Length: 107
Image (cartoon, rainbow, N blue to C red):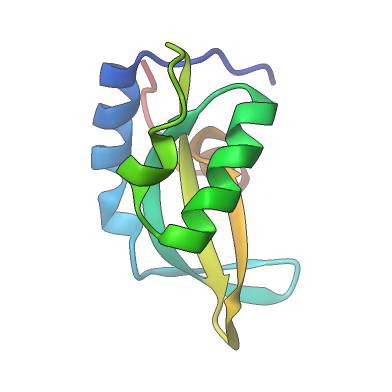
């Protein structure tokens, strides 16, 4: 399924709606992950990749997003392996909700 980008306002609202996932766990391919954060990030893959690298270094959303001057955003879920808190994954919230069967009326 193709996802469209959010505006900053839409992405911020969606990220806020999913804050309750923080510190919950889920399984993915037999590994249990703990949700660390749900944040607003860039939509384009190259910008998203740069953002993710910066976020994993700083754990600061605003600082990691400072480079981005675009207008297309996504909502990203960061989670770490419960047995190795240095092993992170990042997944966009729409893919996560589709995989987990979570119903949400995305903008």
